[in-house]
Image (cartoon, rainbow, N blue to C red; front, side, top):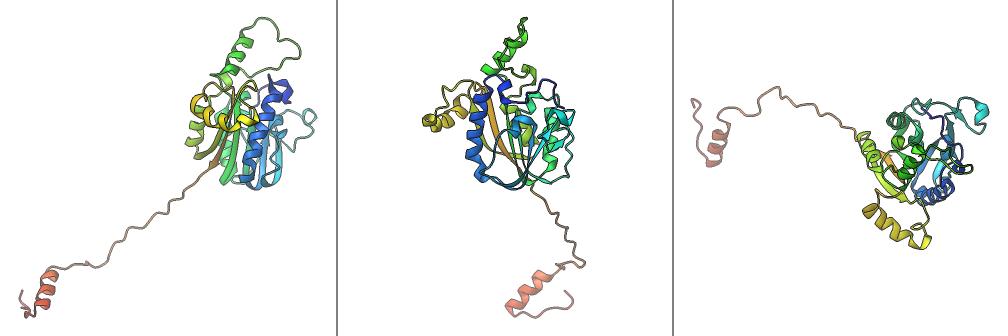
Length: 258
């Protein structure tokens, strides 16, 4: 279920424009590996991101707003906890900070898993509660003064989900994590020339300190075909067969009374 304070634009988030630019860069790198027919984007933040370099043919924008007037660009109005799509009808889904503003994030992942086709793609981004973003959220929530005009907001700290926990949920639902990356609250480690260094060091040394994360996973299903147990109608071996065969090889005559 969508929270009432869910932003409708990246500018409403603290450092939202910076996060949108960095997420788009990651999507541009991952997009060529995506293919299929139907891509689902949930809420406005996801809809503003592009996967034009992918081989996905059709995009559907689902908004969780109450009325069409609040989001005229939406293709479908619905609840991410009860997706109005047939099981297995989606090939990819993008959840850009959707879990951060939901009271039932695990239910959303479960619904997406049902809607995705086998080997379908899921891209999830969110804020890390054990980072500078989590600290900033706690400071804003504990402040008695109203937020200054023009400053972006962050989701509540208790709604932020650590990337390790998201990966655990995905594995329990049958997903395989293909790629992951981390984004800082500032541009200190996000220069293009340092991209390779950042991608190599962030996952190993700073995954718990990065402000935001983006994860690409793929739904996996390994069907097991049961093998019917073979039950012979006649016994394969009979008493005395081995002794008879040995006597035949040695040229000895068989005793019918044996």
